[in-house]
Image (tube, rainbow, N blue to C red; front, top):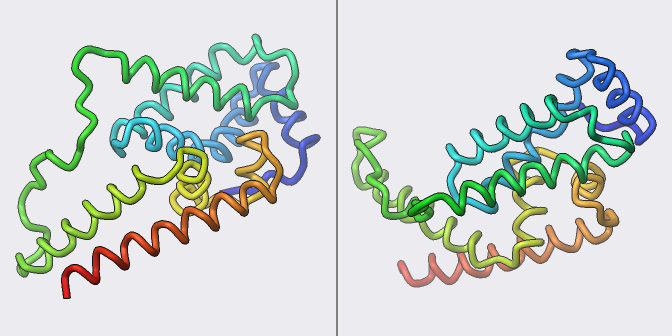
Length: 187
């Protein structure tokens, strides 16, 4: 993922995109799509839904980019868009939030016992992620799955870098402890 070199560079890209420069907007989209997916996954718990909602948020941002008054506020504005899209999705009738009850489908390998262990670990990891405080979970997901640097996460969340570092540290520590307890029960 391209790194955000400076707030001025980003504001410049936003102004260019507001002048209908699709390439500038595509650059911004490339920078923030992983963060949008991480936020959407955090709120919905569904990877396929998170991808769709992130895409929907980017499309809405393109359509409403002229409404953004302060180009330097692009990241928080974009975050609000994806959060609102997620809230709308969650309010729809009978949301299916628990992917753990979904049919895992056919075995991925010729070794069914490995598939069973993999699914058990995935299920426990999902449970451990859901149990994390929301702020810690969001920072960890953007770092681990969004491949974002701490300063990019901080800009996107509107918090200091040290706050992001602390959230990621606490999330990893809690995940490690919970997964270790799970593995200990298997012995």
